[in-house]
Length: 194
Image (cartoon, rainbow, N blue to C red; front, side):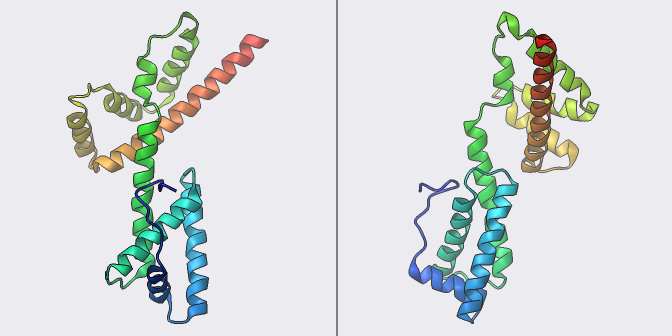
């Protein structure tokens, strides 16, 4: 596997031994904890709608084992693993975002004559959003490429958020908007078929 979140070289035997040793001195208990943590990581990535949660869980544990094998001292291995999991999730979502078509490109396309209903759904769904959410979405996606970073940084500063937190908020709003548009389209199709 190329690694969904980054380069993956696999876990070495030495890395695995150090990982298990960091979890518990008792080998059986360490193995139980390893499987428990692996299951929790898989659920974490599943809950965050990742495509390959098992592979991502393995990636987290591989990275942790590599760090230990490189001599890094970790006092709280569970906390460290959770931090690595968050990092892998961020990397994965960034890659997924780069692959999916951004909303501004989708709606900037010239619309065919029969696509007025889709634009009506977009308008309706935007109107259903709270005014501050609608304004944030429009501001976030309205900037031209050259000004995009500055506009998004100003919006983050105004809201007291990091740019990543702003991006996460906008992605949640966008997901809700896309769901609303799909529901609206489905409702219009049902109405047309009557």
